[in-house]
Image 1 (cartoon, one colour):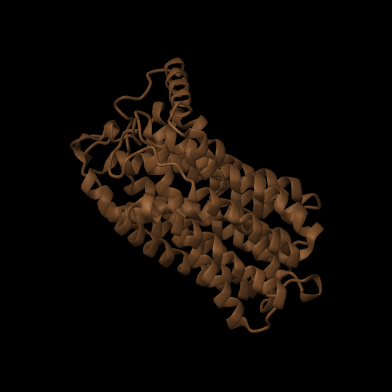
Image 2 (tube, rainbow, N blue to C red):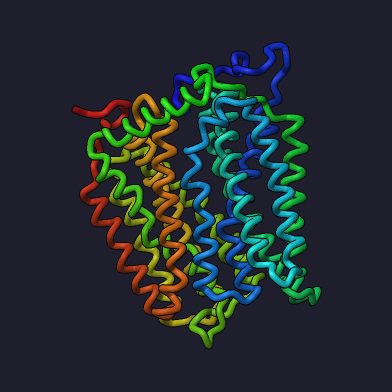
Length: 443
């Protein structure tokens, strides 16, 4: 959100100044944990579930890749979250909705025609999660002063990624335990896990009902729908008038181009049998390697990447950040060519790839924040930029399964490595229309 809309806690619009606000330590970690968990459940964990249930890679990638759409188009309804009721109201409503929809996924799994029902409920969960993201970020910005925002910004990332650990690590591992040790079939194992996710969102609702600040309504928000549409149109037009905007859009889209193909196929490759060219891991091993070790590596990589970019500045560090994200894709090339049987070798390779992903992703976020967002509509323009990023992940994810089935794993990962050269070439010629440390375009 634009700095002009930031409020001190005592001045938060829509809040009672006589009401004591809960300490941020009581709600910031839980809020961002509740943001990361359902998003990863929809975009990542659903793919593993469908793999266990017997769907092909092409089907899985198409169905779950399209589930990035809510995060691509969420800027379209962001003004509504600003205009009506409080941001806390939208957070609570969406958490309650996700409790219901994830519970419905669990209930739909035993049905003979479970596929369209579960996809529909995942889609609704995705739109609720994207709406929660808008409102939760609004609560964070509106309820805390600049010093508190800076103090807790690192907590945001840690607990969002802890949601990734829970969803794609611990819970995937738990499905493996339920299936292998407790002899549940995959349908009932995933019913239990989806029920746990639903219960988690219910607990988040109860907790945030008690401790979450209202967030209020921003003082300069549109007064009605007509005014909101006018503001959105102005923000949209001004975005495309920025200097070098088409080069920046291309950079935002292609930054994670290679990663977009690997994102869906990587876990499926780890699960597929060796007869099919995969590594034949079970859910317990996948949860530990891809969800737990990999996520910890991602967090460490992001912290190191942040320090690196802060020391050198974005312009000087940008190319190295892009290289750091894309070169480690060679680890999947190694795994697909040599099919090592050592669990340690597989774990180290995936951990290296995730560390590079975390390190390099810092450059992507900073480029969108510092080069594409500055101007009178920072919030909207940043949302547009992240939508472009989401469009890359959606478009590459949707076709990755069919491409992998056509090429086979070995050739597919060669292809992913080749297309990873595109963002590196683009980064060498990247445009930086906003001066370092400034907030206005350079003439």
